[in-house]
Image (cartoon, rainbow, N blue to C red; front, top):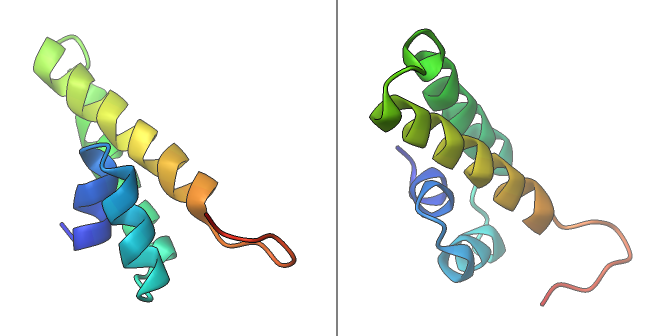
Length: 75
């Protein structure tokens, strides 16, 4: 996985923010995490697969929450 995808998947918000500030591709990272979650769908009855699915979706939420928006200052 890309560094931003990995940071988001692991809940590393500060690292994700630094990568975004350095120009990491947010759309590609979200795509990668969606693929990770999608690959788990047939196997959600397994706790490990459910955890991977949940972490990927939380990573997507994190990245989307860190997206720069016009007129909004970044932390």
